[in-house]
Image 1 (cartoon, rainbow, N blue to C red):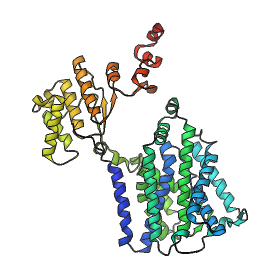
Image 2 (image 1 turned 120 degrees about the vertical axis):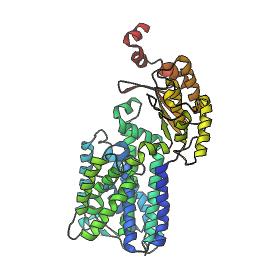
Image 3 (image 1 turned 30 degrees about the horizontal axis):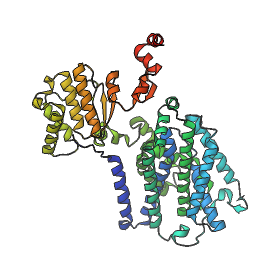
Image 4 (image 1 turned 45 degrees about the vertical axis):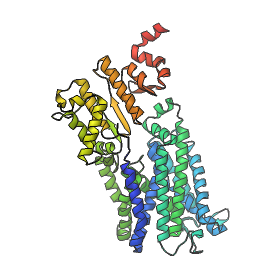
Length: 493
């Protein structure tokens, strides 16, 4: 059996982009280009922060800019009024934003869809308008709509002020790397699993003991904290902050569109969306800002229309096409076996091996190894069309294994098989599992599932009715009723 591997192609691409980013200032010295790159990374960061909650829960927030504004104002005010380093100010602003998110989120977490989106806009606008019409907070001048300029107090790391744009470039690049890594870690964590379950079906998530309000509020607070850090960076980079630019709805729309168009609820979607949209915004503001103010919003609208029509799951969706999914380590079999007709058993397996490498000899060696594992060496040269139904199913299994998956999906593994053939298939699957491959099986034959599974999920009429260890699931009344009918359960009682 070949060892399981996971290519992780999309994340490798992200790592490559970030590593390339480290080298750009060495060869790029133009201030405008550096500024544009900083803004692209800044928007990618904000879109990723928005995605932590909105992408994974599926709730759209158009009020996230308020957290950016809070982070920016707190860091600037602490620096100018108390001489506190912006690095600490970033953290204070992040904590305050998380608290505000909890205060906003607690009474609104039960709202869904457009109702939640409208509520976030309302709260954000209330805070923005208050800032625009307030001159002082606790005796500290914030100058309302006029905004605040950040005074130059030094040119070193402690005060977050530099003569060159290069340090700002590296700071935002590191921040982007951190939030991408955080998103990847969250996706694999309990929090990420619960959030995706809530996004998929709130009622089904509740049936598993998941509290949607609790987990959504946690994600909202985390997202607000990270957004505030981005707002602090922007304020120190631009050295100016005002409510309209740093708390306005336009900034929230920027975050949302970049995440949605790139692919919300994915690790790399916000990054892809920002790399695509942020340059459009920056170039239109730079060259057309005086003549066609707001042109970038028109362009956003056109891009959004095209995305909804042709790429509703975002720009990253093509990266998740079946062939790319297979290369990333996932293989599957079909309910109705689909070996390649007109090709021998061995050739079917060789094709699968060529997915991961272009070495024909290596693929042939793997095919021979798998034929021996499947007990089909004697049928190596037999045309797949001439095989029995069970032999065709084994060929399909071998072809899937030849791609060296880390996760194997199998559908109706013993459909049409005799009891003896079913036991052979069970033995093969056990050996595959023992080799370190995770196997997910859809099957109606209870005996097969009981003999194979570490965990069983039972669905009936599209609803989850049981989830747990086989020994406990098989005795649950809902499961027995689904299999044998209500009369059987009542008779047994």
